[in-house]
Amino acid sequence: MSAENEKLQKVLARAGLGSRREMERAISDGRVQVNGELATLGDRVDKTARIVFDGRPLKSDTGSKRPRVLLYNKPEGEICSRKDPEGRRSVFDRLPRLSGERWICVGRLDYNTTGLLLFTTDGDLANKLMHPSTTIEREYLCRVMGNASEHNLQALVDGVQLDDGVARFTDIVDGGGEGINHWYYVVIMEGRNREVRRLWESQGLQVNRLKRVRYGNVFIPSKVKVGMWTELPEREVDDVYVMAGLTPPEQSPAEAKPGRRSRR
Image (cartoon, rainbow, N blue to C red):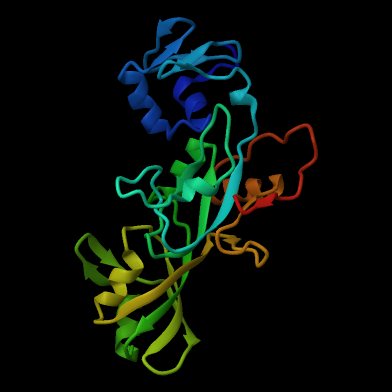
């Protein structure tokens, strides 16, 4: 077997068509052809293979492209789905367009939650970053309405029982504030639905502003304003792979270029 042969689902995932598990289901469902034949699980392909996914040919150079990672500073009022029956704006609307690939969102933020979102063209990377076994810190800045006692804060660190299991903040730092609203920086290790808000609600407190400021070792640069994105340079993309426990992809022939920014 040639050393250049790779599992078909890995090639499809790296092309940004979905996670490796999603690609395995697509192959089982008969949505993939290789060299004119229906693909089966276990198939391996090389760079010369003609791959068709959902009736559309996969560009021959897609597998050799270096994966890309974007950082987006999400504003309020955007959903993390590609389409919405209610016609609300999507985070994907502002991202640069791709040919033969697609952006995959690493996790989600609520409609009214702002801050750091990562996108990548590598389905394997996205899946690994979101998997519960990959313990990556997510840091949020939240404005809490109500008076949080020391007992409340200790309970949130010790862990509280939510509908989907025990959850906790691994760290809470006082961010100041006066009156009924107070700011806190909090860190969680998972990405459950509305987890930060539900944790505070378990103590009878309400979050009225929430922003994700860090994902692992990735922070929002001050130059990336709300509604803007920046593309991570190759060295920072490598850091994201290491954070996910994966081997960084091979360097492109050209030297790493500075991240690009746009309001689109």
